[in-house]
Length: 347
Image (cartoon, rainbow, N blue to C red):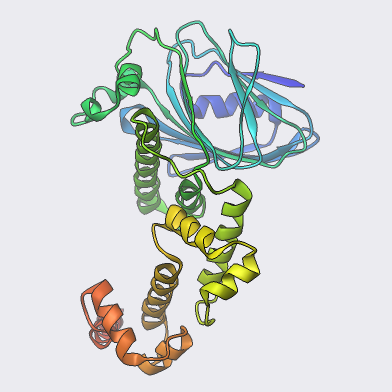
C-alpha cells in the first residue's frame, strides 16, 4: 500500500504533492491543472480547478496497481466534500473510525471532519476509478452574498456555518444515476479559454445543487425511488443511449421490454427516474433534438429530416416541434439560413 499524505491548502498544491508520489507531469491551461501519469504505480489523470468563494473541483480517472491511501489532515482548511463516483469504487473513513464506508458506482457523499480528525480515502488496486469531488471552504463561501444558507436543512446548515470546525458529518446517498449525465458532460467539455472555465463553474454549481437536493429529500423523508436495482438502471441507461445514437429506429415499448428483459412498468419507472420522461416522451425529445441538429448542420429539407429521424407524419412533427421550440420547423430553418448568411458576410 502507498500512503500519500496531503498537507496543502489548495487543490493545485495538493496535485503537486501527489505528483511527488505518483510521478507524471502536471500541465496548466486556463487555471486548470492536470496530472497525467503512466508507470508502475498506476495510469490515469487527475485534474483540478479552483473558483471564487472557496469552491474547487477535483477529478480522478485512474487505475492503480497498488492500494493507494490518501491521508488528509486538513490542517489549515476544513472543507466540505461533495463527491460522486462514476466508475469503480473507493472507500472512506474518519481517523477515529475502524471501518471504511464504500462509495460505489453512481453513489454520492457529503463529508466533513472536525479539527484534528483526518480523512482516510482508500483507492483499491486493479480498479478503474472515476470520481468527482467538489470542495467548499466554508470561511470563504460564507462571504458569498446571497448564498441562501437559510434554505438548507438543519443538519447541512449547521455544517456550513460551523466556522469553528467542531462538526464531523457524513451523508452517503443511495444510487443517483441522473447525476452521472451531468458529471459526464463536465468531463466531456470541449470548449476552450474563458468559455470553458465558465462552463465548468456553472456545471459545478449545478452538481452542488443536485447533491443538496438529494440530501434534502433524505432529511425530509421524501421518497427516493429504490424499487429499481442498480443493474436495471444500467440496462435502462444503455437503451437510452441506443435511442440517442439512432433515433430513426421505430422503437416500440413492448419490443424494448423484450430486448431489455425488463417489464414495461420497470422501463417507464426507470426512464421517469433517470430522465424525468416516459419512454415515449424520451424518444420524442431525442428525435426533436436530432431534427434541430440536422437543421443546423445539413442542407436537408424539412421532409427529408422528418423521415431521417423516424417520424412518418410531417404535420405531427411540425406540431410537436412548435410546442417544444415555440416556432415552426420552417421558421427555425429560415433562421439558421439567415445566420449562416450573416456569418459569410462577416468572413
